[in-house]
Length: 211
Image (tube, rainbow, N blue to C red; front, side, top):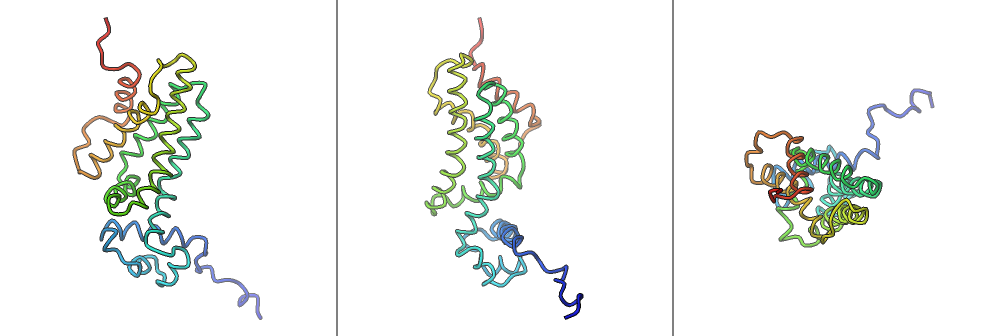
């Protein structure tokens, strides 16, 4: 066998790239056709694979959606938790950093694509809703709550129900993404930086007028 014949063709796709190619194609098809109407064969065609090729990596359509959650959104929650765990020494600074990062992400239509998809399916696919809740939402809430508890212990924050306060921290950020990318509302003229400043000001100082 000649040296040339023994070399692998440079155009051959690496097997490790194929799950990402499938997920990219699936997100495009899910957004175009909706999850229920999307067909695995259409995803395969968009990924330049056979239907059997898709099933080598994902055994069902909902497994593809779980793959999208794991690739697109779950890492954000894990990173948030890492920042929270490292930020106990400066809870205020860590919360500002998290608010800025999440606000930037929620402003991006591409980033919000998977949360938008899950929202549209949660009522009919409780397994998907539970997977998203456990691997994304509860990860974030636990991290924020722990950071708030650290702030209370240091005397930076007053004693409060930190689990509830964590929801109040994340809720407005998520609502902006929902309002903008699901309800197609006007995102307003404020920059992400300005929204973070307003959000953290209200969070840390409240709405009551100071005497």
